[in-house]
View 1 (cartoon, helix red, strand yellow):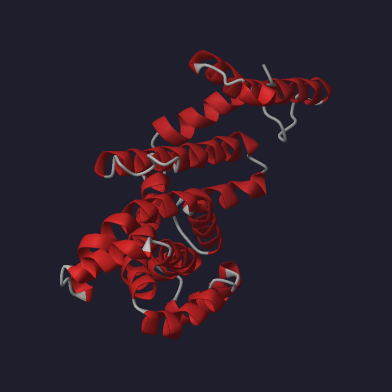
View 2 (tube, rainbow, N blue to C red):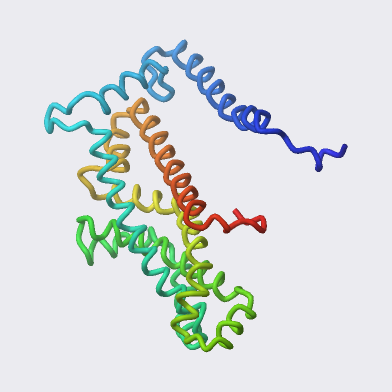
Length: 272
């Protein structure tokens, strides 16, 4: 049998998927042991025991100044900003994406400017947002919206525009209005794609969030990472980076599960 036709079973996929993670851990442990053998006070690659102490301090020990558990307070601060930005982006995308995909006049009006805005590097706008909106929560949320929404709109409008024309024609022959076609024919096809689009934009959204928090914030995961970097506290930075990754993975799995629950028919033709 050719290799192209050999598919691993569930157990084999689990083992194969675990091997790269195991290799990363082993490489880190070997490099850390080598550096610590030469310099026991080395901070670049801390031992696992240092990670354990840092996690206990950040997650399970109240801060002496505020009394808060820093990891959890940082997490909720960051997630609040992230969810607000993604929520606003989803609403704007649904409205603009449907309008551009369904209405040719709106497509001619808005599609060029959306394509242009999507090419602007969002992080380059961060100083402008801080000047115009201040250093508070608004500028951080707006950065996420600006960074994510244009790509979501373009993706959703292309999905809507690529729907089989026969679906629209059949609805028109049944005397459906434009509003009814958008609501009953297009919207059910667009919603699962919007959820998948949000999944794809989780990485950029976290990037914009952490960049904004690093410059101006008094709480948040990005704020904490850039605060402790001046002390070379890699025992805190590495766990925070791992925690951000776990949050992103959990949100991705949650959105995927939501899409499968609400739209179980989506993906029956090989789409994921």
